[in-house]
Length: 360
Length: 279
Image 1 (cartoon, rainbow over the protein chains, first blue to last red):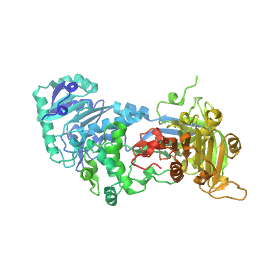
Image 2 (cartoon, rainbow over the protein chains, first blue to last red; image 1 turned 90 degrees about the vertical axis):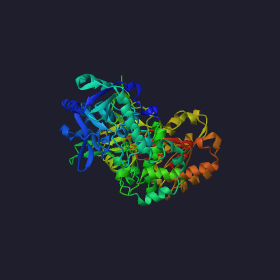
Image 3 (spheres, each protein chain N blue to C red; image 1 turned 90 degrees about the horizontal axis):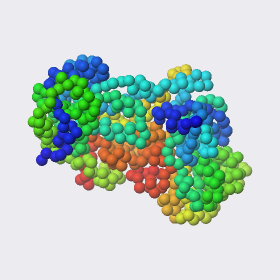
Image 4 (cartoon, rainbow over the protein chains, first blue to last red; image 1 turned 45 degrees about the vertical axis):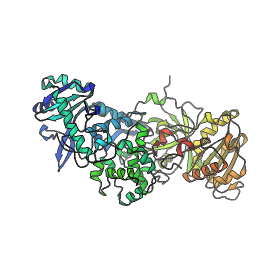
């Protein structure tokens, strides 16, 4: 039962092999011109960090990193521009030029996180073009990695965002013991292969099957979780909007916003000015926000449009599974499980959807 | 040749510099500011659209455009002193610089109103986004049938655009009410909906447009429905928190639509079926 989707697409049929020691050589060489961002184990968790030493890299980590990749494209706090007030005029300096200079490689992104960027693209590069996000996307090479195993909170199979990555990567690695099987997903990826061709070798066809077996194993393991397919619950969710379940959840939800901060597709933000005490200059700053906070919908008159906690508990989940379908044509949950992992009240999106499917 | 604002600035987050060229006090806490883009760019907008206003040294706030459709490079905003940014705006004098992004959103449906009766309903500062529509209608008065304005304010002192009402009253029917009267006030006292008793309407041939506090729009819409207005003949301009104005920041979402880019003017038929309550 090999589904078409798990097979490498025709476009990526150009396949290579890179020995593990050669991958480290490649990263060292890339470090001369790029900032390298890779999974690093610190304080017991794996985090994406800018690395200074290739030995820090922990490829093959299981499950999700502490924070997703969005922090590299929409930083938790970023200066959009600065300004200086001079007598009757104002000088504005756009920070975009600085951002446009950064060149980065992200190594070790899992399928869920890779797909989250494709979702973010539809928001930030849709009807309106966000130049800060665009600059960071253009400057960044994504080298993904197929997971070696699934973790407790993983459910990417049910959100159609894993365990295989279909697109959104420049190169995609699969651990095949002493080497990585390499698929090419873009022109940027192709360029890397040709620039460092001495580090890569052509892969035999058997590796395609090897990768597929690995993906099938992951799918099999995840299917045992017996969850609803999250892209098929739209109508159930619509029907459940006024159900009791949201009142119940609002009694345990702390409205802390951790689910928003760790969600790879929660992009909502605040824009504020940070002013020097003399009020002669300032910075326009964008920061992450959370739809669980009262201030999220508060207007100057003091009116709060999502006052009841149940309306705030709902907002994030309905954005992921309902509104997003209308806005960008797909759900915006990628099944990484971070929101479940970090919730202090042990609220579990999978259980909510299961209950709703069961008529709750 | 002058360029439009959108052409001259590619990054939509960077405000255009603009100058406050005239300030007119409307009420004790509300003034109208005429603003001119500094670099000679054109500023075109549709009645009902809004801008993001920067007061440098304080921050940015979304503000409805309240007039100036006939000017190529300037427009008006009517602002109540309320938050940090608007309070800072009130400390600026004519000649001072502000920042402008926009205009954003979709305005009032002028084409739908043509050859129809128009019922304009404003509450408090909500008259501001209706004013450019009133100006547009009065300039092309023969394109519209009967035009009625209903306006409610807290007290007679709080009535906006006081010196424009005499002219408006000549070209359309005007009904006003205040929550709290005072000696010399001989018009209605009460909430806006009491004004519905003053005249007859023909719901099928009338387009009702409204802007005011959420509670007003709730009761006005209820009344319009009782009178038999079809959903698609009712329009509202909604207020929500906005940071970007471009449908990205996520703050003005109502059940998956965005007030900034899909509105702020909506047909009631669009918003009544949303999962979240819009009014």
